Length: 173
Image (cartoon, rainbow, N blue to C red):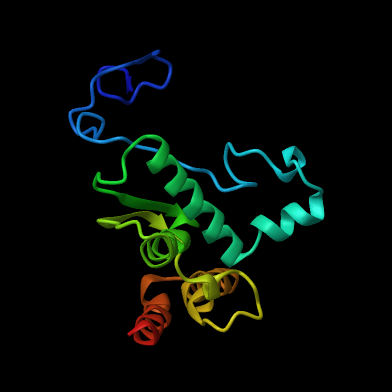
């Protein structure tokens, strides 16, 4: 979509234009929202009761299992088992995609040609959970917290924050 002549006029109506970088000329793109996410239907539309549905689809192994079966079912229905197949993971799909590719290959017998990762969420230990084992969230937030502290003391300068930034970089190495 183009918005304005330079793409920067938010009040102009959007104009549909061809995308020269689109994959649509040479591939089928099939996107699946896992149950309870995106455009998928929640368990309230399940044919079995809520507790049984949750047990069957929520959790790491059930999630990967049913998603892999959905992919396999689509490939069979559409006659695409011999086509090249790439699994794409976006956000939490970055955690799922490698496991789905492995499940397809090792348990179902479907070869996967590669993975495409878009802003993948890979480090589950780097969450905001204070009990997480990863120091990453603390390292990421440390310079900002120190900047706020220095600002309160009216001492915030680039030189004053440089030490904490250097310390954080050293931790990441």
